[in-house]
Image 1 (cartoon, rainbow, N blue to C red):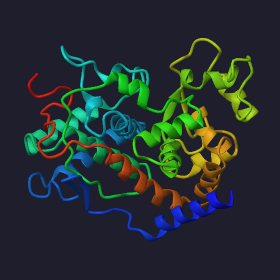
Image 2: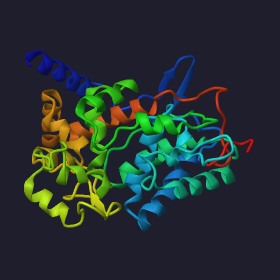
Image 3: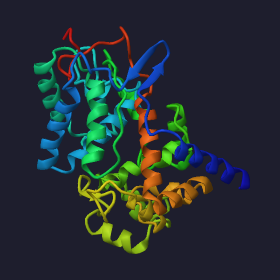
Image 4: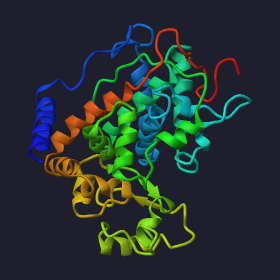
Length: 334
């Protein structure tokens, strides 16, 4: 345990003494840059922010939805906007996958952003970059940290519904499965805990956590790691059958505020999803990180920024790879 604590101390020291963002991220021979559109579409980020702000004013839930789109895109084939593609003759949309079906939302906001950008600078700003920028803006509007988004991603020519089903973390995954899925993307244990903090905003459906209330391990008993009074409260609107689409706040204390309350909930055994609570109950290292984030919101914010920048750099298409879609829902030749 001493060695693992030393490792955590080193990780947090690196966070404390390193810059929050860098202007250039090298991806092989091609680079992403925070200044990528400065000359070709200087109003790009302003346009994205304005559309997101309008959507957020009408529906604060959209912040979590847009942030989730960025996650679910990057975990499948990299950050290439494959999630945004509708099904066509040659494409089976990732929107049909279990993690996205009946829950992924915000596509119309992305459409509005793309339409506005095409009017300003046609075929210049990629849909993948729109997802990255709108995720950042969503976090900021909900009260979370700001960061400079590295840009220059291009859009994929296809999708992977199989990858979406297999690679995106699921609400009932064990800790070891979660860590494996994150490591597969080049993300580590600290990234896992920090990025899970995105669940400080947003909501989840009854069907995603019902097993915790009634039959966690197949023996007809509730999850012992879930606070009994909280479980009783959840059962009132999440019965054993029916009500699958009923929505519940992932953080019932400050559901629309991006803060560190999520980690305080885990310590009180009030994490809504099993995949949240296991960060506090199934691994000593992640338990320690949860405790540190619960104590220090600034540390959480600093770590989150580094982790989401890292996630946003997963296998982007750059240079002449892929394309810049005119409409995010379909490839250009269609």
